[in-house]
Image (cartoon, rainbow, N blue to C red; front, side, top):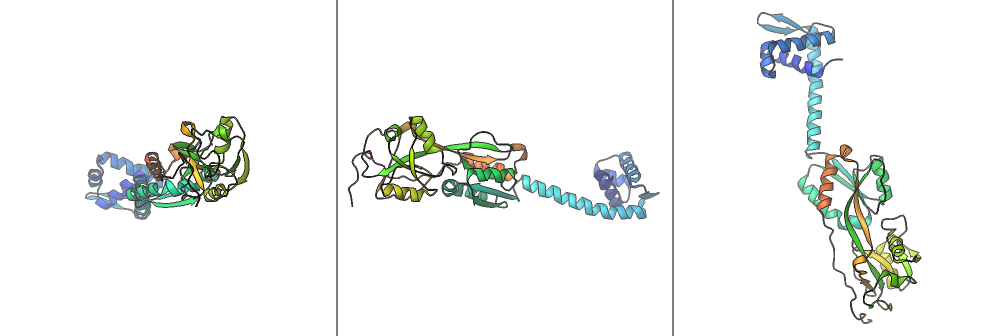
Length: 310
């Protein structure tokens, strides 16, 4: 096996025409250069240099090896440069996924900040549930994913908590509890509920919160679209929990109530590979997400009398 470092020495000797000049260029001693050439000749099984009074000349084997070595060394230099560009985020790619509500609220500002800092890195984003994101991360198809409420360790995946996304109670404006002060989830044990499917993002929030309040909710309707859920609440078919990240336009028949300091919440997270296997781009985006604050819109809430009918 030919040693790459010795190939560099040979190319420098060929360029300079003498061992002494090559030694000066490489910051070696002439003796060290001579030893490197001798070792390379043993590896190659041929004489590579002919020593003369005024320097050295390449043998036929030396010419052949230098021609190939120059190609090899140029490729290695290009590889080192490419790796440096990746490490310094001057090139590369970042493949991301996000659940829907974070994709509409947290992600745009984070992507904008990343592109401003690292314009040479290509970013792609797809929508995926937390379970889909974890699987794609494990398969190497993603570099980072915004997830919610992932539980327990997952082999080859690190889950980083970002922030809690508080949910509010959505109910029809004519509901008897719409203006009740100090409303708590325990007051709603006998209500009919509208919820997102259990396996989607945020699908465990209602059940988890109701269990803490001491009851099991009666879920009669399911939808993975918070706009559709709000419409169902407006139709008077049930109550729902709506996260702050679900930016919905105000509905004339729906009011939102805070459930106080013990209000339910979703744990918004970033899922990435462990640090030793994480790409520089994924690490940079994770830093941005850690500092990112979700965009929030003020939405009308009921604090006193119910709004008048129109």
